[in-house]
Picture 1 (spheres, helix red, strand yellow):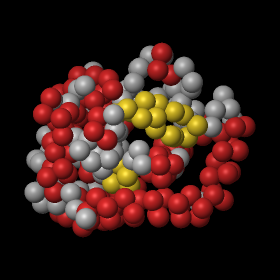
Picture 2: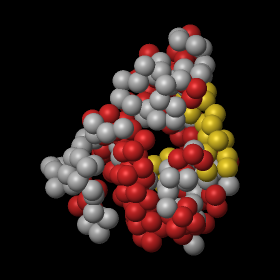
Picture 3: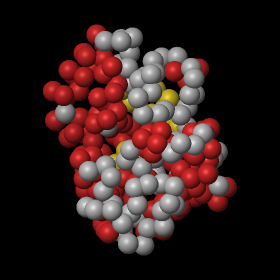
Length: 230
């Protein structure tokens, strides 16, 4: 019943949002077309439901050849490969809006584990890889809420970015996504949608740890501490 209700919600809300947001989407398309390299959409293979690959939709925010430039698949705060319009789109998460198409056609859900590139998916422990996509990947989820400003965390860590991802980010994200698989429900999904809106305005908020007090303990290297305000 949960999966059926969730899918009906996804289809109806995605369709309504696409229609309602059309006055916003069209200017964004025009701005992207007329600035930087003129690229509007970015399509990339991601690992999805039951570990099957699909093509994710996003507004283009980086230079076309960015995967072959310094940094590779890792994006840092103030990354020089990010376009002028892309900085604003990434900060506000408006670059994620085209994923409403992925939700509508069934590749994704509004709430679920974030879909990763295959090279990033392989950083998960084998037991996480087996279970993480038992649910459709989501536009948002517990990993997205906790890692609201992931680029800043990596940039400020002072560590080699790949080592930081390997030793801290993917380890903790994996634990969070396993928590979601064990606790997923309509209530949890609703609270994650509300928390997603909250952390857009308060990115360092620890409110998620108050709403879900049984979340896996956060490693000290992943500041700010969950005992913070808000």
